[in-house]
Image (cartoon, rainbow, N blue to C red; front, side, top):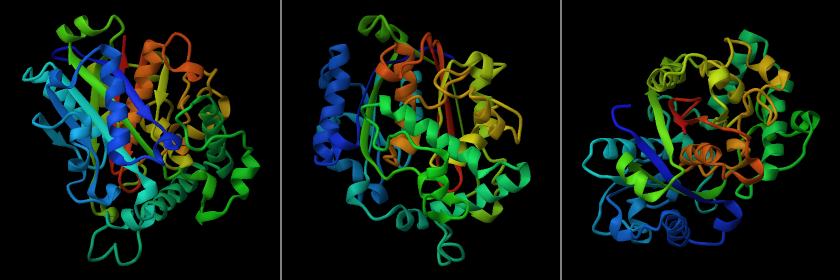
Length: 379
């Protein structure tokens, strides 16, 4: 990258601790925790980027509700709606511009206070042709799953193994919403939502918030002796009209290539130590393996079968439990980056993977992976 930018502090609040508090309370707590880690005060913040959504907060001008709580009052601030990873990119560019030596990035969603996932995501569809027929997040993901399974002979059992792995990993994550030791059979016997997707194949609707502090190289030297450096980033947005997209070859491949080229990564399965992948539906983790270059097309099922992505595998994926375990919709992308940073800092607690030097964080948003972001972090 042109100039070195570091993550020096991250904090999050999970579902159980967020559900009984309002937006201001949990926003204040998560930002205070972030600043306390490096001994900074609100007055020292350069710029603040919030990630929230009028849809997903149930409030117009959604970030204005908690601006004072995160220290944004009379500060240079802006909002990246819908995806916390997009907020991260925005904050990163602001520090890279050298107009600021630090940027606080904050993302939040309280799913318990808003309409259903189906109601909200139906609004993503084209309003004249596709919204009236009821397209939503689950139905479009089911179309993608059916295409994927038919083309590459991926099985429902292989997708179910993702659920077993991730909810099992989540037992070690105090911020996780859904967790437990379940079997492939339990996943397969859960209620069908939209064939072939079952209830346990779907992410939870969670409350949660996350914050992190990005700083320049010079600032990082003053704040910490354990910085996490941003090595590479990439993002790509596919067509808004659902019928104009190739659901098995979207923007993730391009976003990953940009991030890898920037970070100097040639062989991701060998050079990355841990990955936090955004998998709102179990089969998507397998598909994203392929598009991230962790295996060949059609071999995502074989990769999960091999155990390579388990906690003790060649490349552990989602030691936090991933989005299947915790899904505050707008904040989930920033949480993936925070979890990857914690792994490099060696501060991931019981979900820590030994010896992590390079980590990948991925976020997706919109129908069947319309938007993708990839971030490579390192020591």
